[in-house]
Image 1: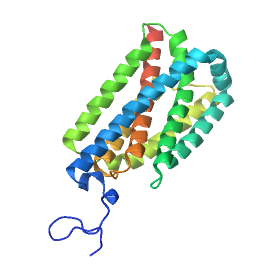
Image 2 (image 1 turned 180 degrees about the vertical axis):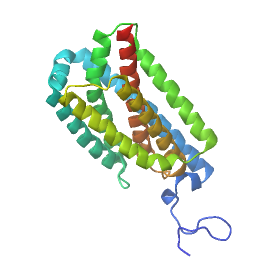
Image 3 (image 1 turned 90 degrees about the vertical axis):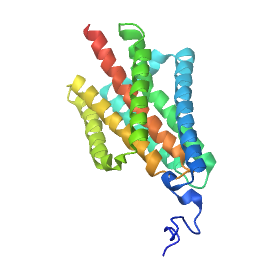
Image 4 (image 1 turned 45 degrees about the vertical axis):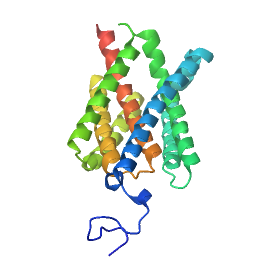
Length: 248
């Protein structure tokens, strides 16, 4: 029998508890892991808001946005750079030996998300009607995230079976984002609804991973995954609200 198997009494022999998935760890370790994960997600959201406030207050946001999205190709370059930085941040956050690297990865990802969100927030703030649309999108995002989180925690369903669908869905969404502008057409609300559905799928998947698959020392990586899904959901909800507002 391997050292990672249960003995006759249903417990683990000769194993470092950090090697256990959270669902198999003792109650205190499991609760501590989940608490730290969601505190980090909350901290990342507040850090994102703070960075956006600093960017809008201290730099010429309009000029920066024009540089990022001034041409079809400039936005594609920004997206490619964002994907590269995101991959690096995820690798750092998943580092199993260095807590410093994990936190640097999360911090790098927050900064990257702040930059990629800037054009959308700028347009929402200056070119849409209908009250504080950014706040409304944030509230809707938080509400959906909360409902899905509660659903997963109550049902304890393992949504890891969604992985393949989410990978292909993400590739399809990325292809639409890159190639639609190049060929001069837009999918409009279809793309927004698809993006919202995909983000919801990722939240279900990431939340069930917190319950079933992450180790108790992987709270930073778990928080980064959840934070990424929340921002993706906010991105498409805000676009949908902007589209509805402009059609009024």
